[in-house]
Length: 76
Image 1 (tube, rainbow, N blue to C red):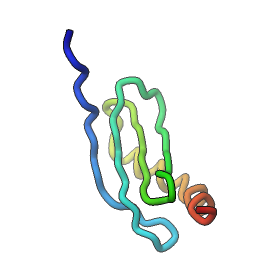
Image 2: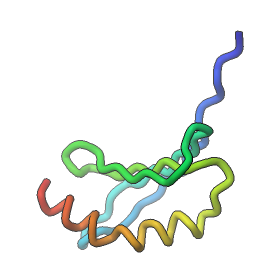
Image 3: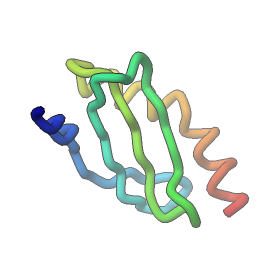
């Protein structure tokens, strides 16, 4: 039996409300939509994306959810 290959990961930084946070973009074969998560303590961000999604779509997603991120990070 073969092991599943690890998901491709892109790591970069993203600025939210004056804070620069590490951002991991993880491609998952099981993903059907984009999912944005904030690490515990607000120390980083993670986006899970379906395979083959263009990077421009990730940027648009982050732009649309900027207010949500700011509100959630203010509570941390």
